[in-house]
Image (tube, rainbow, N blue to C red; front, side, top):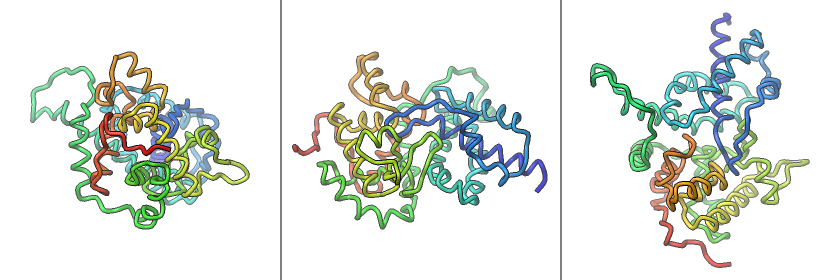
Length: 312
């Protein structure tokens, strides 16, 4: 393999790592990317020898591009992410990372659609300078409904959905929420992000411990039943805090504290009112979950006044 090919592979992996590290997950567990620790954990010999300083500089550049607040900024990452995914899938040690990434390619595709909408090619519209703006939730819902229309079931869903639906029902939740695993991990119980999220419902270590899961000597997040049970309990807790499923899902992805602060700062009471100010992934995550629940289970998220949580 020549140097250019190896560079393309390394660039692809670093793009994916940066995307994942910049994405909130689980208990909002936003974490800063520790480049030294992250790069030290990667077996670069599998991809060829390249100058480490160049790789670190490239990673910092990618990370900087991902720190923005705008969905449109993610659009440029799609081509390299799509190039890198099969490379990650071809390396056994990297497959859990690939399993985490695959469902998130949707976010890059949606960002590309939004970019085309607000910055159409010159032959379709005259050039104009626009301030960066985020899509409104109504547009997001339309996009995800269309994207999921013809999408087949994830391979593992037929096994895990009937097995784990009773877990959610046992906690007084709509059993249809089992489908959150399609958005989080594509129903792959081995999915892992470098930020630390793991399992079907992508629980961070601190969240898992708070919910009573053990991480040593065996990480219970990789036990689908324990992972689903913890996710259900966490969702029940968040719904109890917000009284609204869209806000609960936003908090699951971006963090309870961040959602609460935005609601207070803008005197808001709904997801739609704060959506454009949430992290780019969260803006897309909640409408994607909504569309997934409708597509897979014919289930619509109830509003704030429709309490579907059963009493203890």
